[in-house]
Figure 1 (cartoon, rainbow, N blue to C red):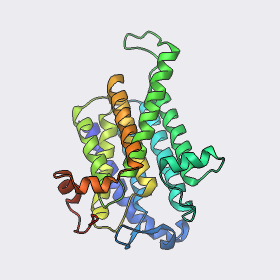
Figure 2: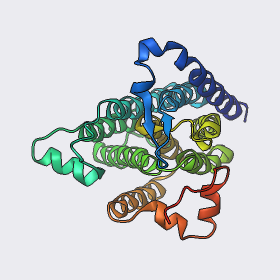
Figure 3: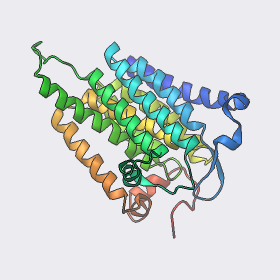
Length: 290
């Protein structure tokens, strides 16, 4: 319990502290014009929440992991999500109009590398590396696992980390939505006290550290923050869940990603009682389409 609470508190404090400190170095990071974007209302919001949350997640993950191997895996997944997400945030060619996973994969298939395509490849690679690090090569009885069984586990876990990173990013379309979803999803893992509890505690802490400014529509996670949050959440699931659960969650994440290409999550939430109220909690009115 001490480890979980410490990881959560550190993640929240580092997120808040980093967000406060970053604007003091505007000359080094490019200034407001580089980091400001327009939200769904057409009002300016800052992307600085993303790197601040990523810093909190990294510190919290190291403190919350139960082994050095788990800590390294969590750092690799989170850093990959943050780094490749930030590249997409800051260098995306908005004139190309390539959107969605299908659009970026289609561009890659035609030999054109978009920043979104680079993000897909980069987060996929770091998620796979993180899964390889945290997946044990020996069974519970100490016997060496068959290489094919280990490789299958690594592939499934890496895909789950990457899919979770992408799914949280898909939710970052309205104030507070992605941080609420990630925090609520991580809370049961943190409370259960399993192998991923401390890492999940870091997700909850970073979400709490970011949610106030996010709901106030001063900040947004952007790809860097949302992908980092989702990648660490996926890592917590991988550390905590058995193979059947991981496969079921992977299937669900992939299904939602496919559906998102044609269905607006915002419209579905707006039409669903309970989800609509939870999504709007703490946010000023007017966040849904007419």
